[in-house]
Length: 320
Ligand code: MTE
Image 1: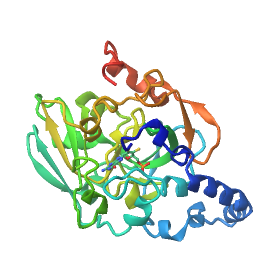
Image 2 (image 1 turned 60 degrees about the horizontal axis):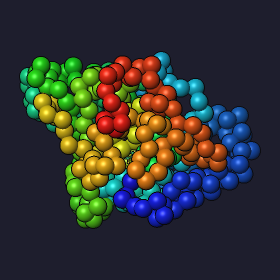
Image 3 (image 1 turned 90 degrees about the vertical axis):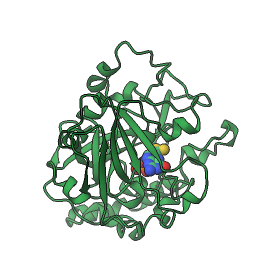
Image 4 (image 1 turned 45 degrees about the vertical axis):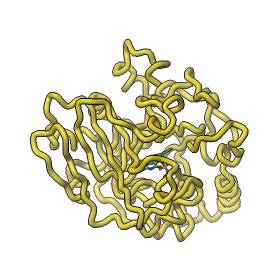
């Protein structure tokens, strides 16, 4: 996401070195993996220990979701070791090494702005507001890579109902943690901190908009946005804010960090759209982490049936 010329974009950003290495390790480890399955060992136990140590809190009572794709799931170790998390680093391999000590408890989320009652929720209370679902979503980064992840959470609408917004509220704004003591990337002014994101109210209420606190059956690893993040599968990955500390209801369209940083490159809507290129690269194809071939990117990342009607009549070239 860094503002780079196309000539600056290393091929490693498209086909990450570690994903290739992981693939080799995966191939070499297939026999071990089969043995693990045969002996009932969870496949997660095959992941690198440093990563396992950051997220081994099993979430109970997870139900399957009707919104899940049946596509092959990207290995945990790819999803948890190749991350965009600028509060830690602009390098994708770094957040998994630097975010381990982020303190995710106690953690509160303030609800403010145009609501009947401003209040603050403990994240553990939020997690109990509805039955956790496993939502296996495709997730497409604006930079051209994609992943398929069994996220755990429930529709953001469950929280919005409890927040009870006023009729004037037209948008939802997400503010994320800004703590320079814990997040070394904040010392670098690559973006304006804190990282902010926003949604129109109908987008926020869409059942696909996932308030997420886990993945692969366990609490989110810190590098993937613990303790609470959004996952918006029809939008480019940067819309899915990590480490949320405040949810505000507003009348005006909220500022979103990447739009503020490069308005001609990153819009407010940022719906996945293979027909609208990024000014410096095509959005027609993508590469799934751990794979070599490119695949076609789908309109709304393949979620058009559930979301396209929210944008009918809008010029998606202007509202990119
Ligand atoms: N949230 C915060 N707070 N800071 C970030 O830098 N990066 C975004 C998004 N959420 C980001 C963030 C981008 S660019 C992407 S692609 C996704 O997180 C990456 O999520 P993942 O690491 O779980 O794949």
